[in-house]
Image (tube, rainbow, N blue to C red; front, side, top):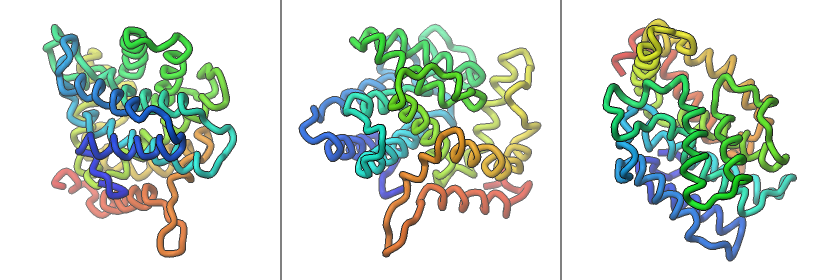
Length: 286
């Protein structure tokens, strides 16, 4: 739970996003966001005839909701500050659609019964873009809107070069970088993030096994190794990426509290890193 919103509660996150939408765009159809949530939730829970329920244990529905909450908060605060370029209601809604489906690449089709969706870790970004191409067209999205959603999703690839993503506008670029920011800080600020790192490692390992033992993209020898390297990953890779390539958009997550500006997400992440550093190799025990 962060910012008093329970990310295990889909409706709670949905209400927060609708609140942001209505404050930024008064009079906008308030049913658009709930329809997006209902559709994506039904797919993740296995209520769609085409897909099995999500079975990746780290990249689950709550992971998506963590990123969605962070993105809605960031775009809400930024919108209230009237920072250029000012996003339209449609751009806001496309960004929410993109974060809701950014990890659909972990879903399996009904006839895909071997292993878990984690086996697609190395290809999940492209699979999510492919999902957007097919599923959003079925739902009546234009080719322009689908391309925008795909470009935003591409910002979540850790190895992606943001400068090479063919954004159609500066507003689309801002949405993409905000989404990439939210995906990273949303998960790393979660109170159970340190405890879920062994699960994340297991997903990497399954993907390596599925790829014939290839370890490209894993970078860790064990769960303990992942835990030990996570503080460095944040300070040497994630934070510089947030401040540089992603334009420091995370600053819009700051809030006023007791007469001073604080950054709840960064504070939560630093607390998690201190927990990991204090555990050392005993982190596997929780």
